[in-house]
Image (tube, rainbow, N blue to C red; front, side):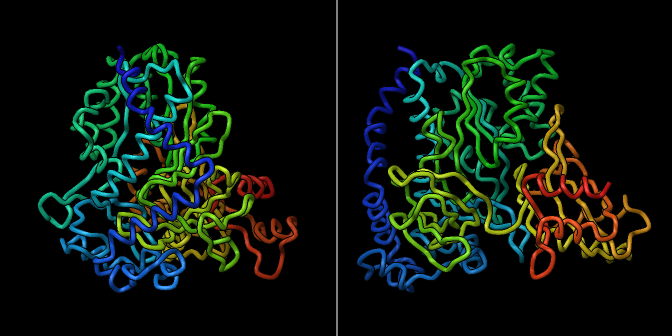
Length: 497
């Protein structure tokens, strides 16, 4: 019997459990909330917010405020220094480093042992379970999985405590048995130098029977292009004849799909989207014919949703299809009524299925860099200070990867006072963005994938002309500062000619 056949037997019980998602969403979520409150009632946060006295959702909402990272930053820093029973029982040793907020270069999201097992790893297992359910002819476990990960470092020099990319934390704590069916080696997977890592991954994986890929589309493409360079082959299936699926998440796949389909021409290739973040694992594309994802309801995460443009917050059983909601989570990692910053739109409520619709704030996250407006404002202010320039209007958007897996950010800037040297201004801006945003800094490392930013100088009144042409001149209308797609910037470039 093959390993894939054994895996199918292992997942049969989970397939039956997942059937509850079809009609019992509210019951599942009420069970999760009850479990979380009971588990955390004796923590400092639980005592302060009366978790032990809560009889249900209404009590929880009455006693617990909405939080952003700024509200819990002090508590998380105490946990990083080794304090126990603060936001979640016991000591938390692992912290996922994520892009920063208005006030900080980085966020440090706690990853408790419970969260690791019942939120992150459970999501990964369900991805495989659902894929095998949908693909009875799969042989994925008869070969290796190529799994990309980041790196980690000691946390405040505390023994056994780590801070780093979530993927690195997952690899560090993974069951040793899994290492028998994955590449690259753990040592290579956790390297911090991506240029060295990419080459080593390619060389280690080339001689293996790789059947499945897992990672962020932009960075996986960079690794695969290195595989093609070394191998000299035309298509990926010439290197790995049994390649059959790419489990992807982190950034939207749409801009990369065409490049992957050119690289992998095998008709048996599948693509499966996941919604996994530093804060938790939330959704899985359970139907290959449906681009929406199934919201995972029996993990250690309780969901609430704020209807965009309003103050209305509802639990899962209060949502409606077609509306944009900001997602609010409470988890076994100690995040309570936490605004994650993502917005989703439900396509179905029986079962609860959704698509990611954006962020609560203007941003660029085409390659995992999570650049927010505050980063942009800091960078521009610094560049202006250093060059004597004055910026009156600007917008920025990604330039998606070319055939060589190169990408960049493109800025259209209207200057009230232009810099003497536009290239110098761009270089200063780029360096400042790396200083204030750790994810942008990581993606810009050695120009391997994310290239230096490009600036197009706008003619006078270009932005006003765009607003007028779109019926938005006057009032509080403005051109979005950052966009994750190119529609607006392309219009501006056309009007600038």
